[in-house]
Length: 231
Image (cartoon, rainbow, N blue to C red; front, side, top):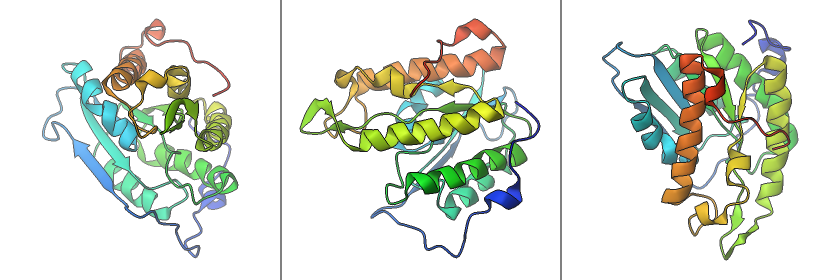
């Protein structure tokens, strides 16, 4: 990853005078496995309940190769509290790889706001990650819970946020794990709420996330599937 990014911290400060837009339930789940050991490199998964769903499988897949941790939260990158949570974790541990996603939550924020604050997310990772290899994961589509073959209108917003994220991570030299593309044509991967995934969908995500992490953990360039542009 480049040592510098095409923006400065001064340019991307979160406007703390802006009242945050809260969801009905706000939550944060930090989980550090083998926090007392340094026998394997550490891997951090950042995301929401989708990442929490595949975390266990990824951790099992990487057993004996990496110690896994997660920061899963309902906070959007447009919320200053998200950065408090992120820095809290990054200050305590050094990670070899950070696999991250943020975009499904924070529907009260506009895509213009998401664009405004995405650079700060990358800058914070660069500043506090101590040289970790970053991987960005695209946000997954949302389906109509009454008819899983159909996409919810929220999916259009996810497409927009994914394009915004791709723009910035491309400039920063951060690879993309296309989880959007992975599940796009598979309604059978979804649970009945149209947002989360069943065992089959979680297994598919677990496999792809594990492959991407192993690619950069071992340096084997052919270990991860090819990225699909446009999602």
